[in-house]
Length: 113
Length: 304
Ligand SMILES: Nc1nc2c(ncn2[C@@H]2O[C@H](COP(=O)(O)OP(=O)(O)OP(=O)(O)O)[C@@H](O)[C@H]2O)c(=O)[nH]1
Ligand SMILES: [Mg+2]
Ligand SMILES: [Zn+2]
Image 1 (tube, rainbow over the protein chains, first blue to last red):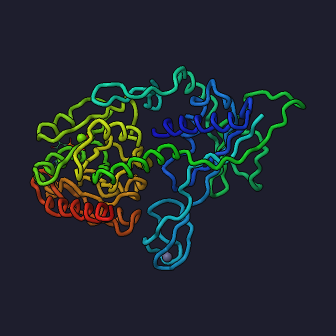
Image 2 (tube, rainbow over the protein chains, first blue to last red):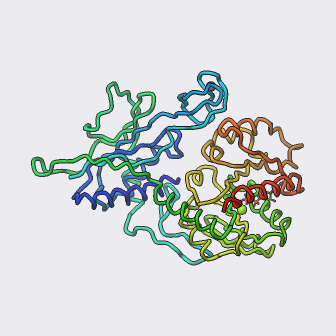
Image 3 (cartoon, rainbow over the protein chains, first blue to last red):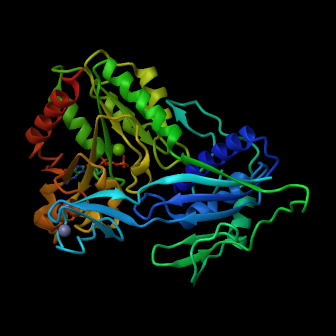
């Protein structure tokens, strides 16, 4: 459950950003977790509460955006959409795919008061 | 310590000495209790475009399904007094680890260390392979080993029995090594210039995948007793590998496993990944593995 360690990093990032903006509280946090990233959105949400307790982000609403997976098909020479790693190319059904998108794990936005 | 998710704070030890304290005062037990109550996901369909103004926790699934994790902001803001402002942050959550990993990589290059990160499920044969590898390498190159396990110094003891310096990191409840732990460990071990340094990650096919340690090469050990489907079930770890070592091939006569399918599956998530079939027990395939390490040294260290 590496999501716990990542949530701790996230809480520290939020604290630092909130301090930079002199915010009293953080009321919303928008996370991006690509569907091909190594992180589970549910587990991340589960750990978020624990890691933001007694911080400026305690009780903040959490929105998780999950951009779809993207890959470059070496055989089609084109960008294609994939749902998960190991999927075949939707056009040629080959497996020579290099993942190009949907891997990110980012703190995107925060709503501050 | 958290008994729910199995992750804990401040328990990382390097050879018995506690090295890091995480933020104190978080009651994980209670936090999880709340999370269990408040975060029961229920899928539902979301007909309109994404709108940041709505006030509830949710997950946007790629197919338009949304899973909600809570009933809305628990805090109260005083209307008319505080105008909420939305700020774009765009910061990588692994940014801190990645920055330390980049520092490690530069540090390793300065010392001419070839650093390999070995990942696998528990018991695939990492330590056995390392012992055999160190014996085969002998005094031809300086070597050192960093061992990662939740508990015990057993693996570092097995390495030290070969005469090679080893350092044990105990992650406590932690499920993976991170770049900071490896920075601490290499500072302590400090092998001679040009050494080959093996890091045995915590036996776990999931969590270590996302954590760059600053290694030059990533090796996933998959033993044939685990079955051919593991690359598709745990794709993250196989996707980032430079080499898949298929271990315990001496057991093939006793098993139904389809090794060709295992290799095909690894290449479905990582086209072109190098594969070596090997038995740490009989030594079959060891030559190819040692040549691969040497080639790695030439590729990664020649440029320095
Ligand atoms: N038959 C056979 N057994 C092996 C081979 N390699 C390792 N083993 C056995 O597999 C068991 C686990 O080996 P370890 O080397 O401790 O595995 P590990 O990956 O280091 O385990 P953890 O550090 O606990 O994750 C031991 O009983 C080894 O003797 C092999 O090539 N063939
Ligand atoms: Mg071991
Ligand atoms: Zn294609």
